[in-house]
Amino acid sequence: MSLLSDATQPESARQAQWLKGCAIFICSLVAFACLDALAKDLVGRYSAPLVNFARYTVIIVFAWCLIWIKRVPVRVAPAERKLLVYRGAMLGMVGICFMPALQYLPLAEATALYFVSPLIVVLLAPMVLRENVGFKQYAAVGLGMIGMLFIVNPLGKVSSDQNIDSGISLFGSLLMLVSATCYALVQLLTRKLALRIQSEQMFAYSALICWLLGFVVLIFWRPPNWPSARDTVEMILMGISGGIGQFLLIYAFKTVPASTLAPFNYFQLVLAVIFGEFFFAQRPSLLSLTGIALIVTAGLLLTLPMLLAYFRAKRA
Image 1 (spheres, rainbow, N blue to C red):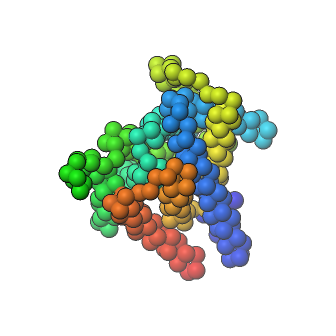
Image 2: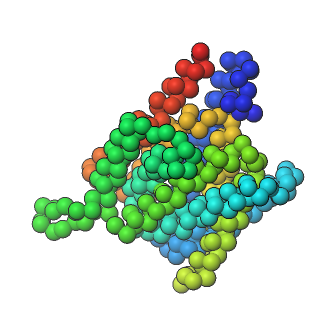
Image 3: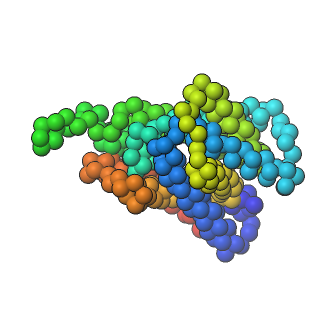
């Protein structure tokens, strides 16, 4: 049941439905934050293609078991199948670029750059969804892009001993920005598919395509070493976290409008800063924190007006 599709239900029921959707969404963000932290730990010891492939090996088993247990039809209409392939390919590219980027970037900065994706959604929405984008939205995107430059710091800075510090890795930053762009396309395609196919179908098809792409990459970049038993368990936990996060995200979008969930996205960024400090002793610099704050501000400027407009429409 969706709040968009059932406007006749009592106000208390709609509020309960919205709270349920928000709770599911926040749980998905916690799962994604755990995935990122586990992946960050693993790519320090193993090749990024291996970690990415291990992630989707677990997810594909999880996804297709759901299809079988819930007896969801595997077949989808050709038009939806085409969109599913596009979505899966973009999501596969997210993992292919995201995992190696973690080898070069601190967790908080990496997650902040990844959160440029909602701003990219605004830039791509007119082309993909035929949505109108106004000056205020473009201004928010510009603010977020300035925050991104603060984090990357491409010009570098001179430290007290006059040694040049180039900031975080430009190569890692480029990989993460490609990942963010692909994820923006994933979000747009998810909007198109959300009410046209079942969540389990979207989850399973995306997992299959991501696994295939990860396998191809692994063939060309064979890992120099294979995981120990302990690290195999950690990879399984990483995959379970990613699978739970993806499924809950799809389910949350089916439960409540995406615009009401968007402001909560930045809870994952807060978790990334906490996890980076606690598990990896990586404290963001003042310049990076400024950039993170600008990205969060830009995201909230984009999403809070939609949330307020939604609640005003409900009370009308």
